[in-house]
Image (cartoon, rainbow, N blue to C red; front, side, top):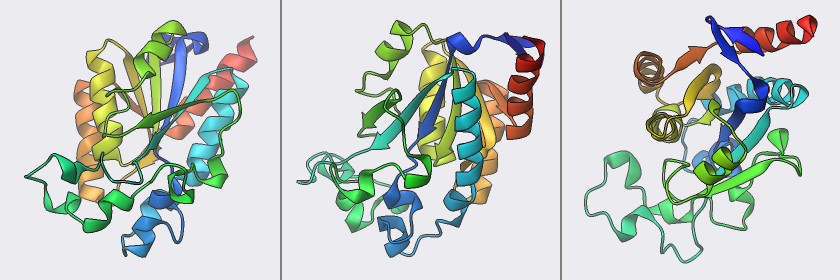
Length: 216
């Protein structure tokens, strides 16, 4: 048991969720990079997420990775149902993003999952929508969700909101999340911290884990 902001947290009840750290979003020559999007904010957090994952592994915290996926046919693309899409989602290559069984859909090699980790394939922003995430978390008696990954104001925040409204406690690690748009990133963290859970620095979270180890 360890404490953060006077809240007692049991690692056995805690899961780390690493959101969408995939080649098409984060890697040089991934789809975002080829489209000219600035992937540097995503690249910048990779060392931090790696530290977070290793710290959680040492304490036996269960780790989930989410993977955004699309069918090769594009049948599950946003364009198949939506007549109204914001400009940022209207790019024609969206159907080619993170296509299943391609390099682009894989988790980046720097954060490669281990065999005991759980992989959640998702087709929309929230990792709870039409996936087994809730079932797995409740079956494993996980009540506290620690979040890292991208994009903070889209997939991370969507999953956080769904998790909170399904009665999970929420922690978001600020240096382990990122957005291409810095203004939206800051707003998202502010909203999460005020309405859905704790927003902590990587140092504070890891130091709390290490402090617990020293007391044992």
